[in-house]
Length: 388
Image 1 (cartoon, rainbow, N blue to C red):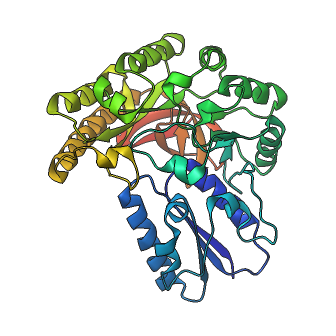
Image 2: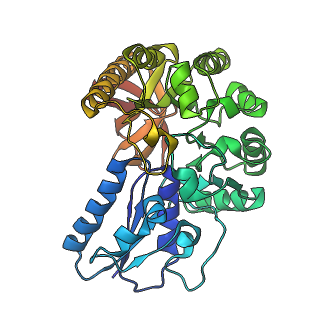
């Protein structure tokens, strides 16, 4: 018997799933489904995962937690496959004897890349989002707890630490100063990566690290959401289109090898074709090479759900157009890397990621090694390389 975790959604969820599994008593036979509520599709996939898990392991008990279960627990509790539904506040020790009401840093046991939570919750009220309802107000973890979690993950074999949370740039005292303290206090931390950033909240200390700290890896994923000022205002985002472009220009000026990822929503209510094209052009203007495209999904009890909605076919078509353009840009970027030498962390089965987060399949390297690889070609979305 064992504890299996099925995780949907964000990196914070993945980190928390590992902590839930670690809290279980020996011999427990549970399947933990850690749900996501960012879109209606994510909620549907959660229900599908529950049914699939029950068919695969009919004797195991199923525990459901996460944002979808927090926002609307009754439908999950009513599913015959489900044994227990646990709210977000108690999820981290859901299988332990003692519940906790505050977050603890979490990491990935046995992984060479480990996510460590530094913050949870959100104080902003984007009109399309329910995560602030599911996660509560922004709460930063103490530096000492984060430092100790990073040390534990490195001791377990992690070669790269990814700081994660719901809104990590809202970390109390600043994300940049947190990273500076971590890097100064833990000399074994040679590879530090950041999860999604709110571009308007990037502080001066973080820009200093981007410019001059090689241990901070040069891939930055920005929560941009749209490329049109009126849509950004209706989303209740706190940045303008020009703010996003200037942020990327500033990053590229101090770290030319930096690569940019972005979240973008297609088909937001009231979006015209001109507005949609502004988001499409943002891929070029912000040099985005790793885009996460979401077709707009009206979530219950949000202001955006009460706005005039676009026909679903229009939403899907605009999302498809954005995805196609993003895929073309990514392919061009990967092709430009052929013939270069890249530093790569080997994660599993001869595959890993370069510092710029390009996926690389390697020959002649073992899990956990950081190697310089000559990039010899591209196969679909993955580069091929040889360790030098």
